Length: 339
Image 1 (cartoon, rainbow, N blue to C red):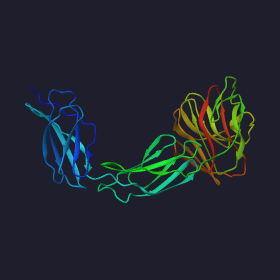
Image 2 (image 1 turned 180 degrees about the vertical axis):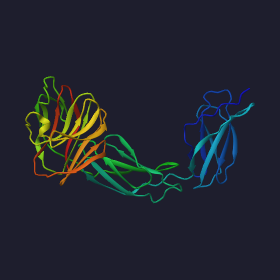
Image 3 (image 1 turned 180 degrees about the horizontal axis):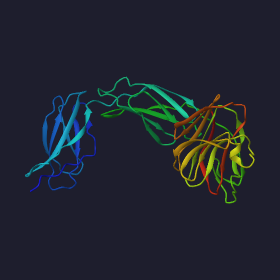
Image 4 (image 1 turned 60 degrees about the horizontal axis):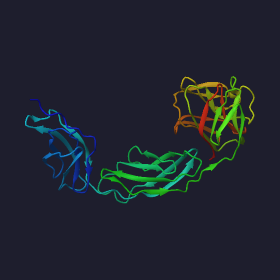
């Protein structure tokens, strides 16, 4: 007879101030006895029978603020499974309190949030923070417990953010921040061989011939603004950025001093003024392209990550622009925002 198989665990232990719940999954096995070894102050070795899938076994009489590691073996009349499965080490404690003094500022297409750590961590170290964009139903995590985060502003509406501290026992109450004001630029589309699918989405029509199509704004800025847009395909050549006219001449890309080229091979290029100068690697349909213009600096981003920063002379009127060399090239989620 062979030894029993390794147990299956997928859920991290759930700690409380003086206890921890460990979960195992017998997968409807006829043999479901387990030997649980817990290391830490006041802990021991425990044998228990799992009576259901995703069975939770409580280990009690533990000490607040202590770290506990554990591993589990499955057992039957043939012995123990050959290799134990280790649980994640967790710290006992209460839920943390809410973060303090949450504040935010706008920088281009990002909301820079800062806060102070909770007055109480519940006896367990705060591991990270969760930031939620409640307007767009998005969730972000900090890398570690640094109390700051730069969250992309997705829509032209003013966002509402919440922040929660996270320790091993769980999440703190949410702290909310809703006074970030976004100022969208008011404009209408000027179109040549382009369809206006919505106020924030345009698509080249079937009559396109070799980059003679464009959709531009009728409003311009010289600096201190941000634009964003999302290509909806990776196999059609098109460009997104700023033109020097609301009615650019053919070929349109020669009149775009700031442009990102979403090529038909799935590669993203810098194509300022009709000149290739950088290859930024692959892009995906739905990615967010953005350009932030502050003073004489232009910052290009892909999904919120900076891919290029350059200087320019902010003396030319710049118009939001999409252009294409083929039909059905679409950009959506387009924003034009004053910084």
